[in-house]
Amino acid sequence: MKILAINGSPRGMNGTTGRLLEEVMAGAVQAGADIEIVTLAQTPVKPCVACDVCHKVGTCPVKDEFEEIKQKLVAADAFILATPNYLLSITAQLKAFLDRCNGLIHLTALEGKYAALVETSGGGGDEDVLEYMQKIVNAMGAQSVGSIGSPGAGHRVFPDQDALFQKARTLGKELCDSVREKRHFPEQDEWRLGFKARMEQLIGYVGEVWPYEQQIVAKR
Ligand SMILES: Cc1cc2nc3c(=O)[nH]c(=O)nc-3n(C[C@H](O)[C@H](O)[C@H](O)COP(=O)(O)O)c2cc1C
Image (cartoon, rainbow, N blue to C red; front, top):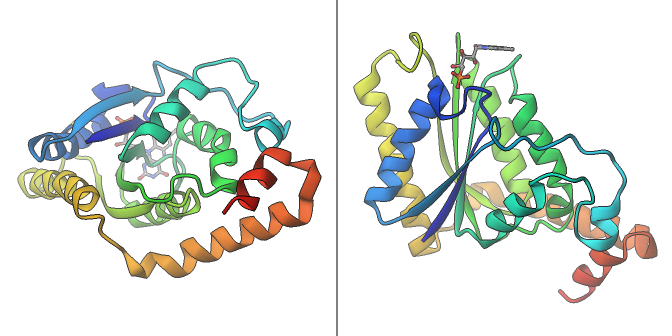
């Protein structure tokens, strides 16, 4: 089982988010996952330039490693998104990556995959960030198996750390179990499938302008 972990912290795996992500990954590895980490601090992805080429031909013309990461995401059974809370939201690094995934989002191309979400903060507000990330996962067509978020208590340490790490390991295991058992999270269907219908309608309406997306939707 292949899992891709995408860490949007500028501190990479040396940060507080990286520490919590390590525990989620440990739970997944113990449950049989083969994990690859993409650290956006080391593999920077430039911002989207809104050229619409991804909608027309299916690939992004901006020159960096985005397409390579995208292929890994498409090939994975599941993925983990991790970020520190930056100004009540995700980091610019993760946002740039997700913006570049707009082609995948139009086609809800990650349908059938599962995701787990990881967030850390200085002082809380974790749920808002995790809720936003779940929407992005659902917009990609994937289902979220759950999330973990916590304020830090210093660099790479947390309040009530043992309980938090236990929860993180359980989340990693849940991600693997969800892939194996092809679990369904019906509470996400209304938003997830509503978004898919909206995107199909948009692609149908725009028609010839986005031939790549039109072709894929026509084959469904
Ligand atoms: C630019 C910036 C913005 C931040 N904004 C918030 C915020 O809005 N709310 C919060 O609780 N913590 C905020 N923090 C604190 C980080 O979320 C927190 O320290 C996090 O655990 C850092 O994770 P890292 O070590 O993986 O980078 C901010 C930190 C930075 C550098």
